[in-house]
Amino acid sequence: MKSRNSARFLSALLAATTYIVLVPAAARAQFGGGTQIVFDPQMFARQFQQLQQETATVTNLAQQLQYMAQNTTGGGAGVWQSNQSLLTNLGNLINEQEGLSYSFQGLTQQFDQLYPGYNTASTPGVQSPEATTETTLNTLNGALASAQTQAQDFQAEQAALQTLELKNQTAVGRLQAIQVGNEIALAQVQQVQMLRQLVMAMMNSQNVAAASQVNRQTQSALEAQALFSAPSAPGTPDMYHDASPPPQP
Image (cartoon, rainbow, N blue to C red; front, side):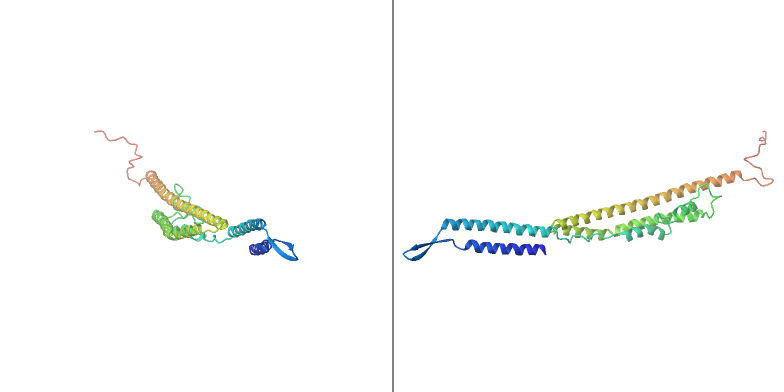
């Protein structure tokens, strides 16, 4: 609204200036009782030059107003969309595969039950080795499903990047260009979040697989220790505790 009022004012000023300048300057002289109009070409040339200067000034002002209007015109925002639901779904995919996910609320307690280590006797509710192995495999499968879901989102990301490129090419002023730059910055932060989620899924899988291996070795050590410390049946020679000397040849 301010731009339109300024343009109207400048147009009225230009019209009034043109009317005043174009009125021919005349000098009237009396010759024998008659009146003769004397035309001064030098004064007319000066007035015409002044008119040209004022016209150029008004044109420059109008162009500046146009630039101001363009630089305050928005419309380059709205391309970025939150992917919070996608990030949440990526973490839940491991849970859906019945694996042990970083997004599980009782992660610490479930980890202790799956991989008790040397605390088998004191840890209630310890799962069987078969269940532990199945959970480990499900966790690895869920991490692969999470990575696959990220790969399937590449097409939507490419469409968003093409939209940003189009807005970058067609920006009409500073505000639109700044808004496009902000949209690109938001998209970069979003990509960092996706990369962090992928790293967390990979670390989740590596830790579960390593814990499964350590727990399996621990269980084997416990079984061997129990076997060596178990008492022998009555009448059965104990090859580990019999201290009698071997028969002489």
